[in-house]
Image 1 (cartoon, rainbow, N blue to C red):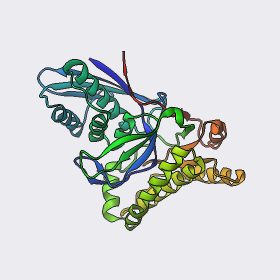
Image 2 (image 1 turned 180 degrees about the vertical axis):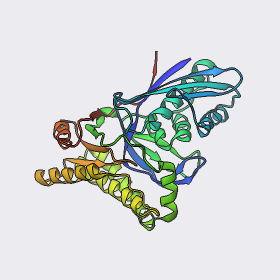
Image 3 (image 1 turned 60 degrees about the vertical axis):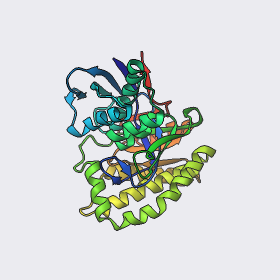
Length: 321
């Protein structure tokens, strides 16, 4: 048995919508930061007798999740069955997406098992593609630091690459848990609705490539003021497309909007952009800032929530033991 640990990531330039639902090929590339082990998933992988078995957080996995195992068999050219057990360890119950950490840990554990037991060595590109088959954003969590998921056009060309090693990223993600409620529309369903009905989404697709280029350059050059500006603009763009969906998808709440006001207020007060907000498909706020400004970002949650996580950027998954 092999055990691996992986962590979630926060996308600075996001993807929302897929070209291919079966292979999880996104409409656009995306850029993220891999977070530290305060937020983690631990996965165990071993070969099984008879049939595949996958247990996630103590419950049987969804039928769709098993396609990851079929994909691994095809990639490795073997016909063995697997037994997978994964558990998410987040300091706050609910409120944060765990699928990225979960499938990155599963992919890493499967790759380590194949190398240890079968002598089959998979590349990090292959591991990224395995994780992608479980959850799109998981493909970014197989690498540390700043990461780009290259959208590609097919299975072979859609995978993640590292832009900057974790030692070269002087940023933190100050996370405020603003709600524990489950969202009414899953990300998967929401994406399909937006692609199908939003006119704004078509405009987003015309500009997101340029934003990727700016964010990529800003990370490499440590031009964090530009990075924060692009991060906020992308979050606003994605949520505008969600609201333009029919019926509208409103993933934010009043507390989320107050954080947006406070971040803009701090940047105006400082006379420059010292931090940037971003929201995934949910109300919980991520404030990205330089490590030295973490305390100032944390104060922005005052009177709104005491459930705060200051996550640094990590080196990515690892095998335990």
